[in-house]
Length: 234
Length: 234
Image (cartoon, rainbow over all chains, first blue to last red):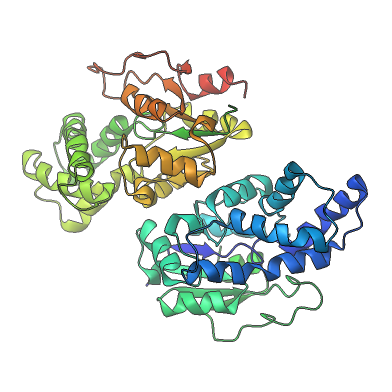
């Protein structure tokens, strides 16, 4: 079946969330006279990510979008990281770190090349508003932004992928999931998506232990998104 | 309340569906040796549009997206317009006329200017796939495509507008509906949206009788989308 659309994981695959938080946090240290270890902060914030999503996936709480989950988890980090001096507006601004993440250096040009031949869609656990603001900030040329609050399901739940295919009026086999995470590709493959693994060995910094290499024979394996464009003949 | 997003009606407001169908149909007459009056054909096809949407709105049938409704209505036109010689693939191609509509001459540059200051989102009764293909074909630089199959409701149902505001994480008062149709603006205003009327006196051709002028004091009235950008200081 001919591939018509590429559906992209975003956090880690397209944008460097950890490096972005460290960069913006370092500026905040200077501006506010803080002394936060933003690498440790980013890791701690992200460590709450999957447990938060699981509570929603498992029906332990009603739907909450990623901005809400990030905000709740940020509240837990405030005492630990000495952020008690920030007021509500400053914390809200901090929470929108995720709207201002920087793309990996290959992401904008790679996606632009892939867009010439394929529909390029964000298929992320981020909410639509977060992804729209990120795309405007980073210059990501998406054809469609399919945030998790459209399906009301978080990956790797099947409904997240199947809703994307349905909204694009495509069969799963006409879609290729592009991700730096083997688990995301595994879930997509089980539904019939083609798969492209993109290596992001620095997503979690120098100490990264997972997703350093493909764990299955994915349809494609690429060093980055420019390499993927080349491999797909774009 | 400060406006953050412009939500655009698409058919008639951004793209010239009637002129596009006439242009592509005229080529089809030459290529296939047909003798169809494509202006009459476009009018007849569009005349089925609101009745089809109403059947869905009124719960007389389950959800069907606009591609499906267009296809059913096309079938009714085949005998009347002498299209019986076209095979299934050719009719399917004809049905995707709506994916290939041309923008009004001011649309791409107007939306690009508006995008510098505002989030620009398609808020259309078209389905996502139709609107994605149209945007790729016409070069429409949407930040977000909020097709009707996302909310599962057709304008002017309130859920269509409110789902768009919710997905953009905005209050209705932070959104401005941009449309060439007074009824669309009326529905949006009742929910708290700001409103911008764009004059499209040729949408239905020379004989157009409705929506030639604003019927209420809308927030803004513009001659076209470039004029709207100027009026909004973009």
